[in-house]
Image (cartoon, rainbow, N blue to C red):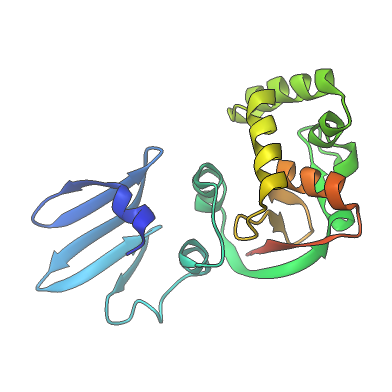
Length: 196
Protein backbone atom coordinates (compact mmCIF):
# COMPACT_ATOMS: atom_id res chain seq x y z
CA UNK A 1 0.00 0.00 0.00
CA UNK A 2 1.46 3.40 -0.94
CA UNK A 3 2.56 5.91 1.70
CA UNK A 4 0.02 8.36 0.31
CA UNK A 5 -2.83 5.93 0.99
CA UNK A 6 -1.49 5.18 4.49
CA UNK A 7 -1.56 8.90 5.30
CA UNK A 8 -5.23 9.03 4.39
CA UNK A 9 -6.25 6.36 6.89
CA UNK A 10 -9.12 7.75 8.95
CA UNK A 11 -11.33 4.94 10.17
CA UNK A 12 -11.05 1.24 10.92
CA UNK A 13 -13.83 -1.07 11.96
CA UNK A 14 -14.10 -4.84 12.12
CA UNK A 15 -15.34 -4.96 8.53
CA UNK A 16 -13.86 -2.02 6.67
CA UNK A 17 -11.13 0.55 6.37
CA UNK A 18 -11.84 3.86 4.68
CA UNK A 19 -9.39 6.31 3.21
CA UNK A 20 -10.45 9.84 2.39
CA UNK A 21 -8.88 12.73 0.51
CA UNK A 22 -10.63 16.04 -0.12
CA UNK A 23 -13.88 14.50 1.04
CA UNK A 24 -13.75 11.62 -1.48
CA UNK A 25 -13.56 7.99 -0.32
CA UNK A 26 -10.77 6.57 -2.40
CA UNK A 27 -10.42 3.06 -1.02
CA UNK A 28 -12.66 0.77 0.99
CA UNK A 29 -11.26 -2.56 2.16
CA UNK A 30 -13.56 -5.24 3.52
CA UNK A 31 -12.70 -8.55 5.15
CA UNK A 32 -15.11 -11.32 4.22
CA UNK A 33 -14.22 -14.87 5.20
CA UNK A 34 -10.51 -13.93 5.50
CA UNK A 35 -10.55 -12.66 1.91
CA UNK A 36 -9.60 -9.05 1.45
CA UNK A 37 -11.82 -7.30 -1.07
CA UNK A 38 -10.54 -3.96 -2.29
CA UNK A 39 -12.84 -1.35 -3.75
CA UNK A 40 -11.06 1.48 -5.55
CA UNK A 41 -13.01 3.94 -7.70
CA UNK A 42 -15.92 1.53 -7.49
CA UNK A 43 -13.92 -1.42 -8.90
CA UNK A 44 -13.79 -4.56 -6.73
CA UNK A 45 -10.89 -6.99 -6.79
CA UNK A 46 -9.40 -9.53 -4.40
CA UNK A 47 -5.79 -9.56 -3.34
CA UNK A 48 -5.21 -12.71 -5.38
CA UNK A 49 -6.35 -11.22 -8.70
CA UNK A 50 -5.77 -7.53 -8.11
CA UNK A 51 -2.98 -7.19 -10.70
CA UNK A 52 -5.13 -8.81 -13.36
CA UNK A 53 -8.08 -6.48 -12.68
CA UNK A 54 -6.28 -3.16 -12.37
CA UNK A 55 -7.96 -0.39 -14.28
CA UNK A 56 -5.92 2.29 -16.11
CA UNK A 57 -6.85 4.73 -13.30
CA UNK A 58 -5.45 2.42 -10.66
CA UNK A 59 -2.28 1.78 -12.67
CA UNK A 60 -1.89 5.54 -13.09
CA UNK A 61 -2.35 6.17 -9.36
CA UNK A 62 0.22 3.50 -8.47
CA UNK A 63 2.78 4.37 -11.18
CA UNK A 64 6.06 5.08 -9.39
CA UNK A 65 7.29 7.16 -12.36
CA UNK A 66 4.69 9.88 -11.82
CA UNK A 67 4.06 12.25 -8.92
CA UNK A 68 0.59 13.78 -8.82
CA UNK A 69 -0.91 17.00 -7.69
CA UNK A 70 -3.65 15.22 -5.72
CA UNK A 71 -6.00 18.20 -6.12
CA UNK A 72 -5.83 17.49 -9.82
CA UNK A 73 -6.09 13.75 -9.37
CA UNK A 74 -9.25 13.96 -7.29
CA UNK A 75 -10.94 16.68 -9.35
CA UNK A 76 -10.17 15.41 -12.84
CA UNK A 77 -9.00 11.81 -12.90
CA UNK A 78 -11.61 10.57 -10.40
CA UNK A 79 -14.48 11.65 -12.66
CA UNK A 80 -12.86 10.80 -16.02
CA UNK A 81 -12.99 7.42 -17.74
CA UNK A 82 -9.47 6.58 -18.84
CA UNK A 83 -8.75 4.07 -21.58
CA UNK A 84 -4.96 4.18 -21.19
CA UNK A 85 -2.06 6.50 -20.48
CA UNK A 86 1.51 6.80 -21.75
CA UNK A 87 4.59 8.62 -20.61
CA UNK A 88 5.99 10.35 -23.69
CA UNK A 89 8.34 13.18 -24.65
CA UNK A 90 6.79 16.14 -26.44
CA UNK A 91 8.02 19.54 -27.63
CA UNK A 92 6.73 22.43 -25.54
CA UNK A 93 5.42 24.17 -28.68
CA UNK A 94 3.05 21.22 -29.30
CA UNK A 95 1.23 21.63 -25.97
CA UNK A 96 -1.95 23.73 -26.01
CA UNK A 97 -4.14 25.27 -23.30
CA UNK A 98 -7.95 25.16 -23.44
CA UNK A 99 -9.31 28.18 -21.60
CA UNK A 100 -12.79 28.74 -20.14
CA UNK A 101 -13.83 30.68 -23.26
CA UNK A 102 -13.52 27.45 -25.28
CA UNK A 103 -10.49 28.64 -27.28
CA UNK A 104 -7.16 26.84 -27.62
CA UNK A 105 -4.04 28.86 -26.82
CA UNK A 106 -0.32 28.28 -27.32
CA UNK A 107 1.64 28.23 -24.05
CA UNK A 108 3.35 31.52 -24.94
CA UNK A 109 -0.10 33.18 -25.10
CA UNK A 110 -1.08 32.00 -21.59
CA UNK A 111 -1.04 34.33 -18.59
CA UNK A 112 1.56 32.30 -16.61
CA UNK A 113 3.98 32.74 -19.52
CA UNK A 114 3.16 36.44 -19.84
CA UNK A 115 3.93 36.81 -16.11
CA UNK A 116 7.42 35.50 -16.74
CA UNK A 117 7.83 38.36 -19.24
CA UNK A 118 6.71 40.97 -16.71
CA UNK A 119 2.93 41.18 -17.29
CA UNK A 120 1.90 40.99 -13.63
CA UNK A 121 -1.55 42.57 -14.04
CA UNK A 122 -2.63 39.99 -16.60
CA UNK A 123 -1.53 37.18 -14.29
CA UNK A 124 -3.45 38.65 -11.34
CA UNK A 125 -6.58 38.83 -13.52
CA UNK A 126 -5.98 35.22 -14.61
CA UNK A 127 -5.70 34.12 -10.95
CA UNK A 128 -9.04 35.75 -10.15
CA UNK A 129 -10.83 34.28 -13.21
CA UNK A 130 -9.38 30.83 -12.58
CA UNK A 131 -10.51 30.90 -8.95
CA UNK A 132 -14.05 31.92 -9.97
CA UNK A 133 -14.25 29.12 -12.58
CA UNK A 134 -12.46 26.27 -10.80
CA UNK A 135 -12.13 27.15 -7.12
CA UNK A 136 -8.35 26.62 -7.37
CA UNK A 137 -6.47 29.45 -5.71
CA UNK A 138 -3.37 30.68 -7.53
CA UNK A 139 -1.25 33.66 -6.54
CA UNK A 140 1.92 35.49 -7.55
CA UNK A 141 3.61 34.31 -4.37
CA UNK A 142 2.76 30.68 -5.04
CA UNK A 143 3.93 30.97 -8.66
CA UNK A 144 7.17 32.69 -7.61
CA UNK A 145 7.91 29.73 -5.29
CA UNK A 146 7.27 27.31 -8.16
CA UNK A 147 9.56 29.33 -10.47
CA UNK A 148 12.38 29.14 -7.89
CA UNK A 149 11.79 25.44 -7.34
CA UNK A 150 11.78 24.54 -11.07
CA UNK A 151 14.83 26.71 -11.77
CA UNK A 152 16.69 25.08 -8.87
CA UNK A 153 15.70 21.49 -9.71
CA UNK A 154 13.01 20.27 -12.09
CA UNK A 155 11.57 16.95 -10.91
CA UNK A 156 10.68 15.01 -14.07
CA UNK A 157 8.40 12.72 -12.04
CA UNK A 158 6.15 15.74 -11.33
CA UNK A 159 5.40 15.73 -15.04
CA UNK A 160 2.62 17.71 -16.74
CA UNK A 161 -0.50 15.77 -17.70
CA UNK A 162 -1.97 16.27 -21.17
CA UNK A 163 -4.96 14.92 -23.07
CA UNK A 164 -4.78 12.75 -26.18
CA UNK A 165 -5.09 16.03 -28.16
CA UNK A 166 -2.02 17.57 -26.42
CA UNK A 167 -4.17 19.91 -24.30
CA UNK A 168 -2.64 20.58 -20.90
CA UNK A 169 -4.71 19.20 -18.03
CA UNK A 170 -2.25 19.82 -15.20
CA UNK A 171 1.17 21.48 -15.16
CA UNK A 172 0.57 24.61 -17.24
CA UNK A 173 2.75 26.75 -14.93
CA UNK A 174 5.64 24.24 -15.03
CA UNK A 175 5.42 24.09 -18.83
CA UNK A 176 5.51 27.89 -19.09
CA UNK A 177 8.61 28.07 -16.86
CA UNK A 178 10.37 25.42 -18.98
CA UNK A 179 9.28 27.18 -22.20
CA UNK A 180 10.82 30.44 -20.97
CA UNK A 181 14.00 28.68 -19.86
CA UNK A 182 14.60 26.33 -22.83
CA UNK A 183 12.43 27.52 -25.74
CA UNK A 184 9.61 25.93 -27.79
CA UNK A 185 11.63 23.06 -29.31
CA UNK A 186 12.65 21.66 -25.90
CA UNK A 187 11.15 18.21 -25.22
CA UNK A 188 9.76 17.28 -21.82
CA UNK A 189 8.26 14.12 -20.35
CA UNK A 190 4.48 14.22 -19.97
CA UNK A 191 1.76 11.78 -18.99
CA UNK A 192 -0.65 11.56 -21.92
CA UNK A 193 -4.16 10.42 -20.96
CA UNK A 194 -6.47 8.77 -23.47
CA UNK A 195 -10.16 8.95 -22.53
CA UNK A 196 -12.65 6.18 -23.29
